[in-house]
Structures are given as structure tokens and as C-alpha cells.
Image 1 (cartoon, one colour):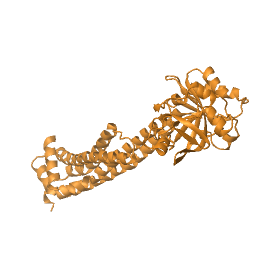
Image 2: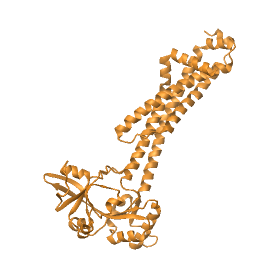
Image 3: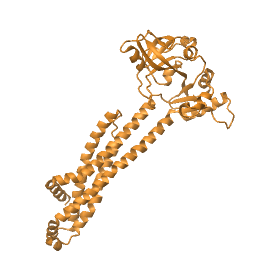
Length: 403
């Protein structure tokens, strides 16, 4: 009985190809829109997570002052950190893998006729370990260079390209403002961070070199702490805050004059926001499916009216009401299913093009594909039931009289 109803449905769809195509257009657009929006949203979420992970694994950043990133007026008024603070963190807090002090200064990098305005970061030999940032070539700072504040540096890829192009700069000296320093290493490409910053636009020098020859002070503006794998960053953060409050002599109940930022929390915040936006876009796109269902119901009602005599004939020769109900219900579900299949193909193709254009990963979510198809079939059942029921309840004698 079911297969007979399916054959009748396919025959009717083939008889009115143009009308059937226009009927399922709403379903096609709805399914394609849901899949496209959700796929782009999940790709954007994956991209944000990857970008933030580029800053380092299990990374805690400690800034002086309050607020996100330690910015604002509080940062400039708060006392800087010291190298003794860095040593205390290394020795007194368990679960720490590496600690790197950091101070920054803007400078003009010059080599020959080329120059480039960049950020100079003064730090220790632990900086690359904390940031999970391998060298592309060359070497890290030695202990003697760190103690003496030697005029050596490592270049990010952007600075290397701007000053040297394809030339190997290892062993060559460049100027950073008035400081001449020798290039001893090239950093591997990192790309942009989750905050839109070009991480490759950087020159790394020993901390004492920046303090003595560029900044003219002994300040440490930030401390980066990497927790060991398997160690809770929340516990390390709590220990950090307790230790720094003691060392900075902050009274009980007083507000911290520093800020500890856990990148896992930042990643979670960005991810949750992205998921909410993705769900919202998917819900808006799903409205098209409802509109498509209304279109199916409208056309099925027209079809019942057109085929009233056919229905009456079937009922008169012995067809049961449930047979007529099944015939029209299967026809509605078949239309919706065709729309769902075409919508899936269109949605995945559009999502692939869009993610490529936006430079985000293509994340195939089979769950949303299946859900979209199931929802389109459910739309066919829900919106096809009323016309099918109306056809099944027709009086055979009145149907045969219908013109």
C-alpha cells in the first residue's frame, strides 16, 4: 500500500514538475540557510579557539593594573613587577611549567634602506616555551646574553619580510631606534591572535637590553605563566593572586592592583558568545522551513480541489479513507524530502564557498545536516496532514458530482 502511494505521489509530482519545484523552493532555501549559517558559525568558533590557542597553551597572563589586558589609567598608576616577582612565582607556585617576564616598547627597525615600525618585546629565554613558539631558524638567548643585556634579537616573520625579504638575516645587525643588535633567530609564523593582533610583527630582545638601552628603567610590565599539562589553571591563578597580593603588600579587602587573565576563560567566553550567535542565526534561517511548509500545504489543498473527482472515483470503487489519506500525506512528505535533499547539497556547497571566502575552517556537522533533513520531512507531515485529511473525508457522491 505504501509503495503504491509512493508511485502515485511521484507520478503526480512528475506531471506538475514546475509547480512541484516552486513548492519545494521554500524547503530548499530553509534547509540550505540553516546548514550554511550553522556551518559558518561553527567555523568561526573553531577559528577563534585556534587563534587564542596561538598565544600559548595553559597560559596565564599577569598585567599590572585592573581591567581586560591591564589597560586604562590603573595600569600606568600601578607599580610594575620585578624580576624578584618572577623568581618567586617560579619557586613558590607548584604546577608552573615556565615563567617569562615581559616589557614592550615601540621602535623603528632599520636595515639598509628598509625600515619598519614594530613592537620590541624584552623578555627571557623562557618566552618561546611559555608561548609554545618554536624558532624557524637560529637560536634562543644564552644565559650570558640575558645577564649582560647583550645587543641580540630574534625577529618575527613580518619584520623579517619587511626588512630582508627572502634574504637570510641570521648574523646580520639591524637598528632598533638607536640600538644596533645582531639577529640570532627567526620566529616561526604565528599569524593573528584572537584579538586581531599580528603576532609576527615583533622583535624579541633580552629583558635587560630593553630596560637599559631602550626604556631606561627596570620595569617588568607583564608576566606570562605557563601551567604544566594536567594542572588546573584555576588553582595556579588562585596561587598567583595570593602570592602577588603578599609581595605587593595589598591589604585584606583592598582591590588588586594587578590582573591575572586565564586564556581558557577567554576562549570559553568567546566560544559561548559564538555559539549563541550561531544558534540565533540557525533559528532565523529555520523560519524559512516553516514558510516552505505553508507553501506545501497551500499547493496540496489546491491539488485536493483539482483531483476531487479522482478521489471520489477511488472511494467509490472501494478505496478506504486511510488509503486516500496516505496518498496525499506521502505526496507532501515526498515534496518536503526532495526539498531537504536539494537544500542539503546547496547548503554544504554554499557553506564551503563562504568559509573559504571568510578564511575560517569548514566544520562538517552531520548532526545539523540530519536534523535539517528530519525537520523538512516533519514539515511535510505536519503541513501535509490537513489537506490529506480533507481529501480522505470527502463524500464519494459529492466528489463525483464535482466539476
